[in-house]
Length: 274
Image (cartoon, rainbow, N blue to C red; front, side, top):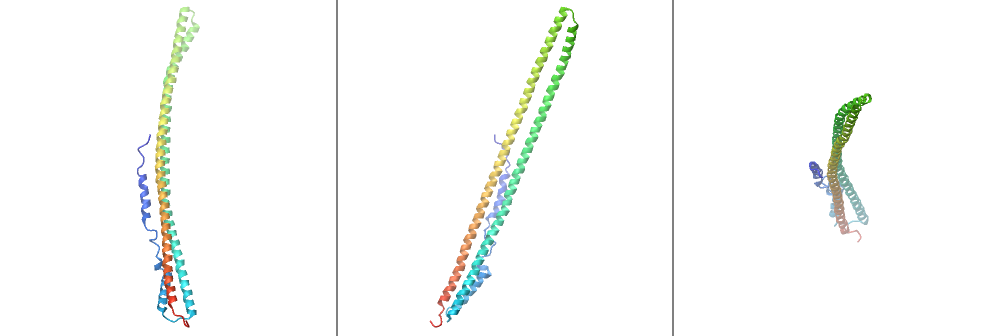
């Protein structure tokens, strides 16, 4: 049987964990265009643009190419630094979100512990009720048995002293009747004890089944929420990583385009003696 008490609050726990994930992965990382390395490359390309119609020596052309390559290398290195910064921030966000998974697991464990404690208290109460019921049965039959045993003892003493055959026969019949009553009481006592034990055995089984189902339902629901959250966190991190990789590729292309622009200006420069 399925318990209908399951905590609906569990399903509300995950929502806050995912809201923060919708922010762009590269929001906090500056663009390559805003860095001093790219600005230096851009400024140098502007210088080359200004010189593209001026006569240059082969040595100057070589110097321009070397300097342009150096500035491209610095800008490209900065792209890699920005990429690593993005990845680092994505990992930090992932770690913070993982704390929500840990908290959810702790809530699951706490609720399961509460259920187990409640189950044990219920079983302890049933055991106490069983002991009390059995004690009442034993006391009730003990009083009756004591009374009959006293009658039996008294009748046997009389029989031992009796000489009259009729009296003896009557005493024997009395003793037999008392013994029958004792046997009947013993059977009734066993029956009452069996009924009581069966009653409390059923209560124990029902309690165990009830709490086992509640524990199972709680565990399954929390585990489902945890699995869904972990899956979502992996997806968010992978998306952030892909965004960072795409941005790195785009920014490498930006640097290369500016570099190629500079190469174009150098190629346009007239060389002395040619």
